[in-house]
Length: 193
Ligand code: HEM
Image (cartoon, helix red, strand yellow):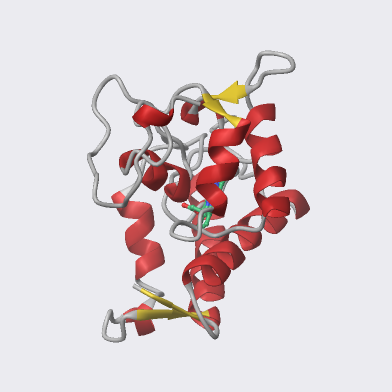
């Protein structure tokens, strides 16, 4: 790991430019935008990602969880036995990336990796009481937002003669992602917006 390139504080922030790669994961992108992992989003080692995910001032994951996530990230690298990964490798559809995301489109309809204002607007419409008045997301709102995305995705696929992929694996992953932001960013079943 090139220590000199990695940020020590959250104070550094820059959006990615044309030479930088990013992922469908808002958490990983945030770490890169703050240079807590390499800003270019490339050649991230197992040690670098575990360190970044476990730091008390970042997501403060347990070493066990971080090691599990790092293994998934490295497996997304198409090179056999890779020891690093690039952020744009984790958008491999059907591996971790799936249809019915909260802030990304489905692969059959548009980019499955870049932020979609339209998709996130739908999600946000369910958060914070659906009116943006209370600056928190509750379990009830998070589950309604996800279910609405399921229905909306199905409808949009049918309109273009395609089939959404949302089975057991995708449901577990997507509800797991919601659980992650409740546990990592929230407290007592509420996440501050
Ligand atoms: C090495 C670690 C990680 C990897 C490889 C990873 C990978 C991914 C991938 C591939 C997606 C896209 C899933 C989709 O299609 O919707 C995703 C989404 C997501 N990730 Fe991560 N992630 C990691 C760590 C984290 C952490 C620490 C958090 C904590 C907040 C997090 C929160 C989320 C959330 C909330 C989404 C859903 C975004 C959406 O639905 O639009 N991830 N992640």
